[in-house]
Length: 320
Image 1 (cartoon, rainbow, N blue to C red):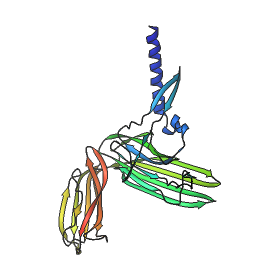
Image 2: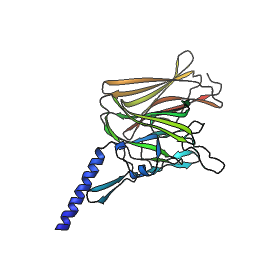
Image 3: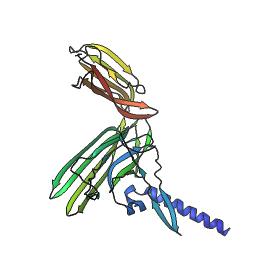
Image 4: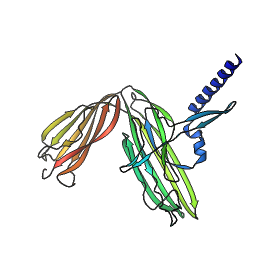
């Protein structure tokens, strides 16, 4: 009986600790891994699904607990960086350039090089944008990175978005760890932005280097898409051809009709205040033969999830 009571008390204490950690802001819970190794925020991934990052909660002594935030490391392939087995979602991060090192192969600086960082997109993060600027401020090399993107909710869905910061260690390794969550409804036509920031300055060998990073992910309530039409127009603004697609069966690409000078893509949807219509015009680009490419932007709706999509338009050589 005494043993059962003791077990019950320990179990309840663990539950209480889990509940407390769930309520805390992701940045307020410092993990053992964070204490062991410095890293720099470089991006974020967002998903409606929970990602197993290997978090661990241990009872170190009666009434004391140790919480360790786990890490899911990215892999470097010939095509670039990738995270294995991520669920549906999307993200963006900026790989900080690493110095090549001195004659002994030792890296002098863990952060900056004279080159711009590599911007990486992963998954279906809508309208993702990444920009960086290298400058010199008061004798300090300054790398300023701004990353942004959108995720979408439509209809009357209630969605919980989970945000996972992406960090880079001083030796160049990149990992994803646990962050915060945010609820969003698709019924009110609003938006909510979740922002992560980092500002670090290091002095190595008498040289100061500053890295500032801002990652802003906006959850946007959008109309539920109903159809997407593409009008092929000639130079006299006459309709040559009209195509219609459902949001869950959009084409991989569109070939402009013979004699087309421009295309009009029209996205139809139903929102909280009625029908919405959005227009997107695409004209011939100056890319090389046999096709030149430009894009029409719309939204794909599949398996209850909404994401933006950019459909390439092929223009035949010698047309228009």
